[in-house]
Length: 325
Image (cartoon, rainbow, N blue to C red; front, top):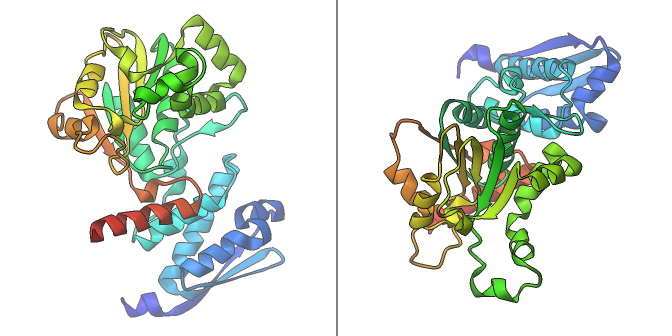
């Protein structure tokens, strides 16, 4: 490290709006404390002035991060601990955060007025792949937004009339004999396996619109086994939890694609629930289809987790444990 990076310096920022500053700094300056814990700086706020003291490089990094957070806030984006954590993660990895650039892409606005947008570089790459390719595989751990972003892209395509319906599916690997013991008709039996898909659509569309689309057949939520024999034109098709599909099911699903349709396949290859000895259709597809024109693969990592910060640490701990084994 150069001497200029180690030299201590103090930079001062003028806070033009106290309410705005409080929104960026977090409750009881929580976000500032997070920055101090991650980087070798001291931050002090007095009246309309913020002072950053520490090694030159760290001071400039903090100044840049805070500037980016203020920019996001002025664009109408509420600042959360997650945003600060991600910015710090990139800095510690030796990268410039460029958060306004990552957050710039609004995919869709939910029924409650919330804007859905990528929140990490990996997510931005994933969204771009879904725009550019006819079939996209989004592979990564829990909490990386694989399913939710795919749903948002599907709703955006539906609203823009690029497709006429959404078809959502996932394998019910736990079903087997147990399905018959569950109460109700077929829909009642498979609903528990499809619940995560419903939840995402409720959030984006609102329950009333979701129910209306279901009744009119604009949205169809079905178990993977019931996709056989169909050709799906003008549709946005999402296969969720694809790591639990068999190779036969995966090939069957991929060959349902009709004219004017797009498909997104999501899964986590570290969470395969198939019986021991059974090959995952997702794992096999990654090997077979790599390099095929019109198919994109995006691999999300623990760096793209947008849930509670603890989720990222849990995923990392499990990854380290598996490597040791």
